[in-house]
Image (tube, rainbow, N blue to C red; front, side, top):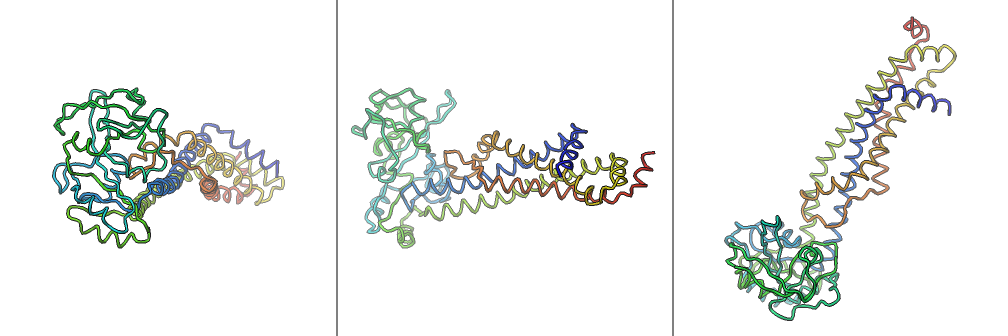
Amino acid sequence: MSGAWRMAWRNLTRRRLRSALTLAGLAVAVAVMACLLAFGQGYESGLSRELDRMGMQLMLVPLGCPYDAAARVLKGRAPEAGGLQGPDPALPAAALAAVRHDPDVAVAAPLLMAAVPRPSEGRTDLWVGLDRSSLALKPWWRLTPGSHWFQRPDDVILGAEAAAAELRSPGDPFYSPGTAKHGSSGTRLRVAGVLERSGTSDDSLFFLPLPTAQAMFGETGRLSAIAIRLKDPTRVADVAARLQQLPGAQVVTLTEMMGTFLNLVGSVRTLVLAIGILAVAISALSVFNTMLAAVLERTPELGVLRAIGASRLAVFRLVALEALFLSLAGGVVGLLLAAGGGRWVEAAVKGFVPLAPEESLLALTGAVITRCLLLSIGAGLAAGCYPAWRASRLAPAEALRSEG
């Protein structure tokens, strides 16, 4: 057997460029497949973790597209203009009192989201107005030394990345440029604190006391959303039905939203995986072409093997081993490409999926590696079966005659 392995390897290295091109095509197809499988698994588990640690079961948002509104609030983005509430979709402040009076609600945290473009710096600042009730929904928040919660109306708390971008520390003055949209010429604030890095969207946000944010952005008496935690999570359906009656508002349950997003991502992933499988199939055709060409080129050599006593099975096994070498090498190189370049694929894909967590989602687990290797080997062996069968059927006399 060891001799057959050495002969198979030597045969592949005869036409190095052809073998390398075939291997490269298979490797790219396997790399794409591995990235898609790894990202899909990582996204599902990451989304579950991110929603679980939100500490809430419901969200009250303005009328419009509920899942889009909820996703924007959870990711620290301002609601889009054009909703039924006017240019800036918002909840009336009266909705907060109604939610807090519900007997099944444990925490109701009001939120006001606003975006402040800074075109000269090529960025947009995302501001969030909140009150102390939000702390109950964010147990992972930790303030850096010297920081404290809001004590004055002009206090601002910066996320870790926002503080690094602004070069600000607790106690420093802070100036927020105004915008024409909000009719503000700018606001002078003081940095009350900086949040420790959490790996969530909070790292890039600017936090204000809710009344200050409402005045600063011309949204007095209005809210972007209300995050809700229940005393008994099993009462979600009953509470949602009651809150759905509030005028100008709609309820989104985090469980429904996650299910909707996962169904959407699952459909897209099925389509993309079909494209990946098609790429692997095309690569298998390349393996087929390479192996068939090798068999035709080596017809006299294979005839000699048959003439000196090699069985049909031995010849079949020799060619099949070559296909196995090629497909296994392609699978391994493809996995290495996925491990090395998967971060760029992940960064590109994250922009097209809803509520993508901030942490890395590319999970090259043992299951993903095994599936990709089996797919690569299976495709290679399937492509090599006909050339191996054809080689094994060569008659020694005819093969030797073709040499002459």
